[in-house]
Each structure stands twice: as C-alpha cells, then as structure tokens.
Figure (cartoon, each protein chain N blue to C red):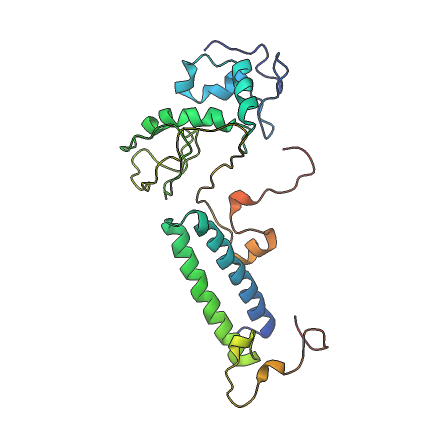
Length: 165
Length: 87
C-alpha cells in the first residue's frame, strides 16, 4: 500500500500531525492498514486532517468520528449484517465479542445476529455540533470494586497515569 | 447476608446501590439492552435483600424503613454525628 506519509514510524508525520494513541507507533498509513476497505481510498494525512478539523471529535483511539462514520458502510458489509445500514453512528446492543475488524467498535461477530434494530442516527453530522462516541456494553467490575473505581463499567475507567494518553 | 455484621451489610448496600444507579444510567441511553437489564434486576434484588436484613437487625435506613407502628424508631440514637454511629 502506498504510503501517504513520509515517516510511518514517527508519532508525527511530515505534515506535522500527531498520530496514534497509547504509545502505538502508527503513522497515517498504518492507521489505515487495518481497514482494508479504506486502502482503496486516497486518504492522505492531509485529507484526514482536514476532516478532523471539521468535526474535532475523536474517540479514545484518536480516530476522527467523521472519519469513522464513513467506515460504517463498509463495516456493515464486513460484519455480514443482513440489515445494511447507511453511514452514521451505530447504536446497537450485542453480546458478541469485539471484532478487531470492527473499526466502528460495534461489538459483533461475523455470525452474530443479536443486533437490535435501531437505525443509524442519520447520515449527517452537521458542523458546530458536539458528538459523543456511543458506549457499548462491556465488562463490568464487581459492585464493591466499581464503587472504589467510580464506575462499574471497565470501559469508563480512565485510570489517571499522570501523562497524556 | 444474615451472617454479615453491621458494617459489612452497610458496605454491601453502598456498593450494590451504586451498581443499580450505574446500570440505570446506562439503561437511560440503552433501554433495549438485555445485558444491562439483567444486571439491573440482579443488583436491585440483592439491594432489596441487603436493606431488609439491615433494617430488621439494625433499624431503619430511611424514613420508609420504619416498621414499628407504636414508636417512631427513626429518631433512635445514635445519629450520624454521635459517637457510636458507624456512618
């Protein structure tokens, strides 16, 4: 795959944009490596950055929400979901395990049919609006531990580490 | 739960009540989630049992827990700021 970035192993590319999260060294092209359907699209760092600048919303992995939105269409096909959804925020409850291919972070397996029938919340992301990544059902702490941590949801426990994550 | 001391029961009530609140908040945005609903009912049942055991043995936790029909046991000592209170 042709790299759009001069320095794939740096935390910042030649364009001066920061990459990656949680210490993982990922340049622009590596961010896209796990998204096969995105390889065909000519999304250079600059283009993505422009998109990021539009919505300014990132999830925990540092991915642009608007960028992720457009992956939803591909993701639906990838998950072999019979209900083909248009691009938009996914809002599903599922007991399936998280698939690493699910870039939209929707919990599912390829043969999982336990998605509910809630539609995507529209295809539009108007500007100057704040968007919050949708919480999925995940692992829980025991009640006693949850009380100590401040939440029973492990996904919501952002442990303070004293530096930028 | 019957074998728990007062402090252990109180801690159980605190943590279980917290779990119920957390799950309620999650269900506010995910009303159709079967996993959350199951956990909610489980913790709610556990909380109800813990409160019942506590109030039977140690007195009311809220004004709604006063069982006695002759005396208003809610004002029985110790109050939270008094010595001997485990609050």
